[in-house]
Amino acid sequence: MITDRRNLLNASALGAAGVLIASRAEAAPLPSALGRDATQYGVRSNIQDDQTRILQRAIDDATRLQAPLVLPPGNYRTGPLRLSRGTQLVGIRGATVLTSLGGGPLLSGDGADHVSLNGITLDGNYATLPPRRGLVQFTQSNEMRIDDCTIVKSGHAGIWLERCAGAIRGNAFSDIATTAIVSFDGTGLLVAQNTISNTRSNGIEILRSTLGDDGTQVIDNRIEDIKAGPGGSGQYGNAINAFRAGNVIVSGNRIRNCDYSAVRGNSASNIHITGNSVSQVREVALYSEFAFEGAVIANNTVDGAAFGVSVCNFNEGGRIAVVQGNIIRNLIPKRPSGTIPDDDAGVGIYVEADATVSGNVVENAPAFGIIAGWGRYLRDVAITGNVVRNAFVGIGVSVMPGAGTALVSNNMISGAARGAVVGLDHAKPTTPDLTAKGAQGFAQIALSGNVVR
Image (tube, rainbow, N blue to C red):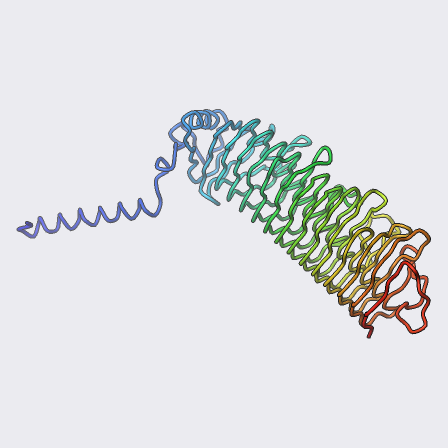
């Protein structure tokens, strides 16, 4: 029992101190409670000294002990650091910074399975990197995790992966000399909820050395301000580029202000491009081209592009597509400089072979709402149940010798100055409106039930 005033005050002070200590512990655990504290190895922040040797020793020791290495808030100047199987680096998001002193990738690993990076800002300091390198570089590494990091000022790519699997989630990339995220010959990768801005080649590249299954999922990212710095006719300036990579899913991304495409699938079979929001792109917004079989382009919105959707290159084996439920509007009449001079613009949807185009809305297309076929490259296309408003030509269908069959039925076409449905010689209208009374018929075009206003 407390019997006097002095004991009562002492007890109250001790109790308050205990509560304060407990509350601090709950709010912010000490670094040592999370893993090995880098400062225990002599690592120091906010000084000009090169911390490479001490940081590498700390990383190696923590990895050997299978413990996370915790980097407290501050700026650590360092050269290249090597990560190995099981390395875990933990920082305080927005407060822990590794600044590159040059000489190669800031963090790299080969066969570094189960590596984890969390809450670290990686500043490339504009240091030059060789080709096929990133500020973060991994080869043949599985189950890797890069979460809640910030990657800025890289002299080449932000993250470069070769033959890797894992997840890149919730990171921020800006001021990147080439591409924010590159995966080459991936073996199962998730790229989700990242923010990417101001890159000078592409936003995300999913690439393979030969045609094959990839299965990368690119989901719910925000990508904007992508420049085609090296020029070219479409290799650069894309938010998301899949090349030779099969079974890639691109879904739920917000994409704005790209010099070329929002999503470009090149020889990428079974690609899914669904539920993306796209604005201010200056070439084809959603692209499936060259040697692919199978593309689903559905439930996207495109506001401002030279082309809304293009599914093409039947001459290269490009075939089988579903283009469904998209809203495409406010097309622009010209493609960027560097594209082939006779490439057209102001087109909502373009398809060539073994495809269905249904349930889309196209509005304000200076050239064509929908096109089927290019010369003789047309086969088995169904265009049904679409709404086309304010297009020069509502729906254009190739009527060249050798062109295959197209079904054009039950579409609503409003305000098509040149005609609701018109026969084409490539991009040139060659017939009157085929929906007009007494108009010439073509055996390969099945017309029925269209409403023209």
